[in-house]
Length: 129
Image 1 (tube, one colour):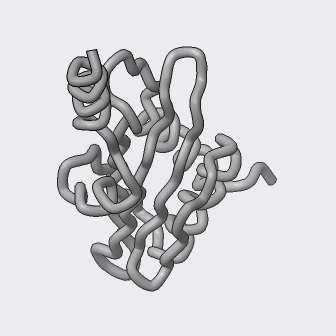
Image 2 (cartoon, one colour):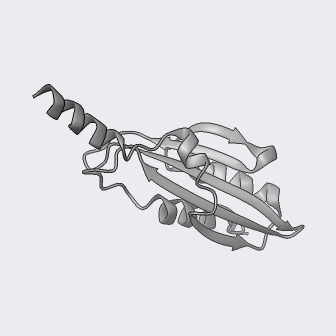
């Protein structure tokens, strides 16, 4: 019985996402490009995370990386999310979002890539005049 419990624990932990594993996933997420300068897009990504009430684990503007965390819900054991912001030119910026569940078995997380990209789009809209 003890071996069965250990085996089950190893099974559950095999799909774990940590802050480090999500940071190492650059290049594996969904990417969008925006016709705005780096500063504006980075700030919009940070505002989007705050608006969606995600915990900011790391905010590294000089390296273009925001690491976020979302806790346990009825459908999910939580997620780790990395947002990579990269200037392409003075007036164009690329954003990549990677989302990984904390525990992959029995986990049905929200589509954080879509949710955050939609919110970034809103944050970048020109203010109504």
